[in-house]
Amino acid sequence: MSAVHNPESAPARAARTQPGASSLLIDATDVHAWYGSSHILHGVNFRLAAGETVGLLGRNGMGKTTLIRTLLGLVKQRSGRIVMQGRDLSQGKPYQAARQGTAYVPEGRGIFPTLSVRENLIMSARAGTRGQREWTEQKVLDTFPRLAERLDNLGSQLSGGEQQMLSIGRALMTNPDAIILDEATEGLAPLIVAEIWRVLGEIRATGLAAVVVDRNYRMVMANADRLAILEKGRMVLEGSAAELQHQPDEIGRYLGV
Ligand SMILES: Nc1ncnc2c1ncn2[C@@H]1O[C@H](COP(=O)(O)OP(=O)(O)OP(=O)(O)O)[C@@H](O)[C@H]1O
Ligand SMILES: [Mg+2]
Image (cartoon, rainbow, N blue to C red; front, side, top):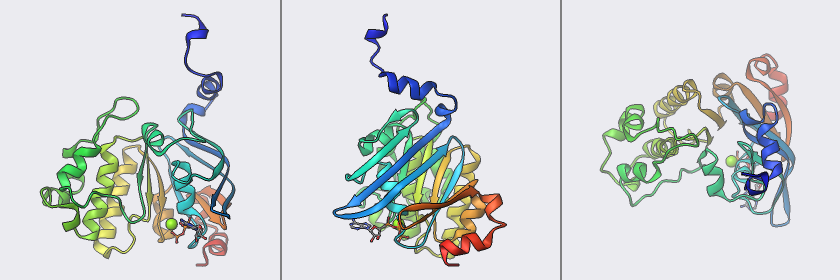
């Protein structure tokens, strides 16, 4: 077949064949975002490599959720270049980000309240970008034994912690290459918070890449490879978690801790 019949565009091919490009799950450059006339993100660069965990930090209202939602195509007013696994999704739709292997556990969850736990899980089930089907209903239930006890309960009948587990379980059922968690431990009891961090550790150990937003920056630091700190819509500090752990003044400056 001649190249003329190849449906893949030249830039897409170039992006895939660039050295190192294939290992970048998310490669975002000079991202801007607006809500109405409010300019929220001011030229943010953000990268996520295969298998790494990035802790996204910043005080309230600094743009963490907006960055995530912009990467996923959920904020309409945006500019910049957003590439996921070699595919240009700068103008992409949320389902395209999902198809490129990026799963999202939103702030405030995102489960179906009128469906049972089992239905919530089954609805999300699909193979990953490489056909992988590692995360089955059984594996999710093994990971979250509490959900196994609530299989026939409706989403609305679950406690806040169980809803959060179900939301993570749903994301895992899509067999993603990357999972983005926005405040997954928000408002939960300490025991449940510990349970969620345990699972995040297990997920990380499987080699699934993650972006983690959480108010407990110490836990984020301890559970991430890299940290990225946003201030007023700009990326002000980035580095390996191990290195930044020894620079508490830098962290304190931006997080006010
Ligand atoms: N739907 C919206 N419409 C207008 N402005 C918004 C909207 N959502 C967020 N903002 C504003 O955008 C800015 C960034 O908010 P964002 O939610 O991204 O911050 P955040 O870092 O996630 O904060 P938090 O830690 O409180 O979750 C804030 O000034 C916020 O008030
Ligand atoms: Mg937020």
